[in-house]
Image 1 (cartoon, rainbow, N blue to C red):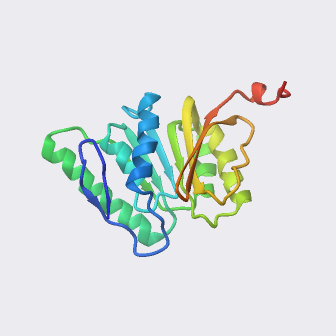
Image 2 (tube, rainbow, N blue to C red):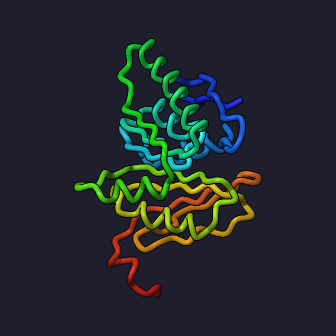
Amino acid sequence: MTRIISGTAGSLRLEVPKAGTRPTSDRVREAIFSTLDSWGLVDEARVLDLYAGSGALGLEAASRGASLVTLVEKHPQAAGVAARNWGAIKGAFTRTGGTAPEVEVARQSVQAFLEARGDRDPAPTWDVAFIDPPYDLGETELAANLAALVPLLAPDAAVMVERSTRSPEPAWPAGLERVREKNYGETQLWWAEPTSLEDSDQPTP
């Protein structure tokens, strides 16, 4: 069972696609949001959930006070599940008289989404980006995703990449650097934050 852990829709059960996705466990999601809370990056945040699947990560952020959440999922069945889950969570806001955040489900590939948004003038910016791809996603494709994400991040944004502990560390592009890593059983979390391109071009002392 997958559920919303906390916030307006706390304890609400989420639908999960029958195949093709790997929902983040409650334990790992709680760890993710504990980190974000400690950094002050949940309330009123603009959140991007890439490879969203059921939308559990992004919708957890919505329940906890994010102002805008974008769920990106190319598989039609999973995108439909994410949209239905958002409908259920939006209902929780309606029942409590709260103001629901703005939530978008984008049914397209992650790379296509990032490149299209990067071409906008001005490009949108996000405070938090979750990247939870299938474990069999190639490292080259993940690196391309990260590079396309960099210009869409707010200066103090946080990027979380969830991978198998058997996967190598992501290849961080210029403008993004690792700040933390933690494993939970078979799950590895990598955290990164933006840096200025000038700083990233400097040699390491």
